[in-house]
Length: 316
Image (cartoon, helix red, strand yellow):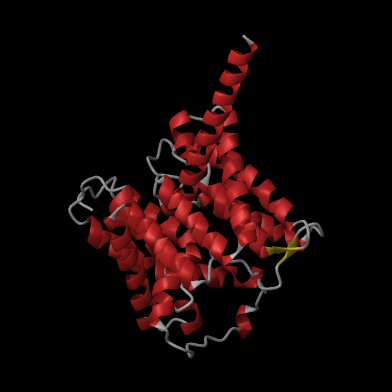
């Protein structure tokens, strides 16, 4: 009798570990609006190659978010699909990068936990609108926690995030034009990565989920590169991929994931991807006095704009 119980317990543990692994990998892939365990694994490998520390934070953050969704009694399908993990992934990564000090990893993991509750609240608030929450919880929580660095000594802003006075701001559009870097690093910046090999792996991860995901990611990034270049953006930002990552997420969202058989979905997606460029520039300017990054707010605003308009303009 004891042996049977012990075997049953081991089987249960194996099932739990398997469920947590699969759901967590899907949570990582959901950052780019894809539900695929292999894609999630390749993304995690790409992050690990760039920074083992960041890879560990990613893994712990997605596990925390997934477990909170499960233990908290959220809809099982949503938890299993990784929808409680992706905001935790981004929050944990962002806070570990944009804060300094020995305790930043602890703050990052606490943030990954808090954003899971925030996600649940946003799901409830947004359910009547028919719009997805996307990465809005990650953006707001990360901005709020970074702003606490000006009032609380426990939180220390990274020296890389330097507040600047707009009255003394000068635009420098000079610099090297490296189209290869811009093509590869755009997708990497979704996960705060500035590594060409990691960017290539991320494209492989996206193509694994489906050729359309990969092709649209390339189109979205190209649209942002061309738009930002001809609008006279700073070359250093363009070719680091800082105008591309929001465009990639936007075109995938409006042209594939949340498309309801609209005839002009790809065209609308390209337009929305191009629109993320001036919106990114605008948000960057707003946040300049605080030294905060735009994160994925351009993606959220452009996606909500298109998805909301489709409620009325049904052909879009």
